[in-house]
Amino acid sequence: MNRVRAFLLFSILLTIVLFALYRTPFTIYVGLFYAFLLWAGEKRIRERESFLNYQTLTGAAMAAVAPVFLIVKISGYVSPSTFHALSLLGLSLILFELPGTEVPSALLLLEAAVALTGKTSSFRTLVGWLSDLFVAMTSILVKGLVALTGLPIELSGTTATVGSSIVIIGSGCSGLDAFAIYLVATLVLIYVRRSKKREALLLTAGALGIIPLNGLRIFTLLFIGYRSGISFLELFHSHLGDLMFVAYVFLYWWWATGKGKASAAS
Image (cartoon, rainbow, N blue to C red; front, top):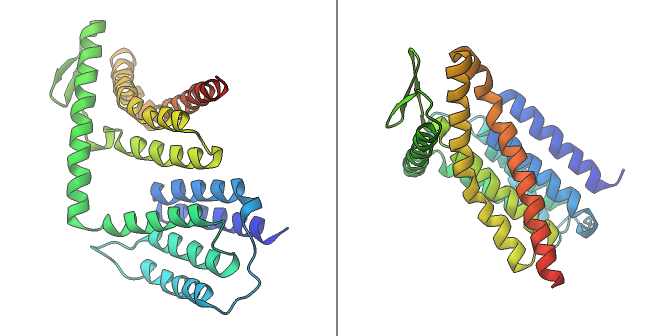
């Protein structure tokens, strides 16, 4: 097994262990994207032969500092994502030449930046504002679907009355996380495919479909709750969105990449 593949397996193992310990979805999403980038760019990655220069010293410093973020609490919390990013980035700088690993390294820097800024009140305020905006759009779409289908569910703002139960469309139902994940995954796909302008625009525009998709998800959950009871709504709540998201992403990507090829051929 060559060094790149060994490091790829290590990165996956580290990602899984951190997720098992801290239950942070952000870490596992970035970790899987990072592993995919390593796999896709394996032929472009060159192993380092010289280990005593500024790059390896920088990498060693990052790897040495990384454990601090599992010990020191920032705004009351440790930061496994920052540990994840700095550990992998530090080891990558030690083991491989930087040309060939720019995009995977940039993803790790983005992970660390988001993880650290996420501890600030300004970032939380921004995310809260965006979540409220997405919730508002989702509520409008759900209300429209309820009116269109004639389902006997009362909607007032973000509150839905299903039989004798009340369902709140809160920040966890905003779809903002799916929107962000789609954008990151799409940028990775565009990089791997070396997409032309038309294909890149089509793939990126697919993020807009996450908003009506989330409205359809909430409506479907309310329909399940109305037909089968709130217990069934809660049963499907955790996984229905994931299934719909994955299906949408791959179907849209299949369509968009096909359109991109057709455009290039013409």
